[in-house]
Image (cartoon, rainbow, N blue to C red; front, top):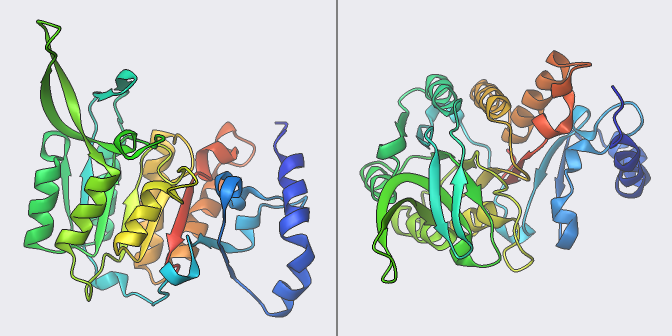
Length: 304
């Protein structure tokens, strides 16, 4: 199978990585942390190619909106619990451009089951139970160190068009129309920011916020690293998010493997690296070996 992206990935590798290889090898560096700006934020660094292997096959990789937002502390995942919300059903949301339809996410239920199995004493809620109010209620009862949101997401040019899709249905009436329409409620960028600020004390921040949704890491220059960047600013130590529209089945497997690796004692960056390498090894010479399947997810913030 011809990999037409590899020539460009190798060119970027020669620009960004090759000049530092001798120093990295001399210091036996295992994890690379990037602070990106502008258009560089949309580049999947894990896919950079040296001619034989991807960068992720040699280094664990993480990103930081800024050094001032990074608080690298080692966690003990065996003491952590996850609160997972997911949307499996088709959804329609109202936007300034009109109605937007989202396909059902058929693998989300198995994704959440695998996560709660990997991390004991965790809790998952699906579809109609996935509402902003229920999310706040659960966090007020127990400030879970990990929040996992498996749903569709979109990053627009302003706060109103930047959102995650929830399972709550709302009826909308327009004055010029006699017809009522039912839409899924959106969890906006500002909603997420306010929710985290209200429910988490400064001395007990979120350990990890995982957003397995479409394009949740990509934002405008005004909102660096999108929803995940906002999560970091609001107090989450780290976040996992996607650079582009993700494959439902691949996401379920990769994220489940990440949590298993992390729970076994790896750092978050190495846990994600190991999950992506395992995917590559399992799908050699197959369509699924393309970075479109395994490379969208990135780790932002505390990489330990």
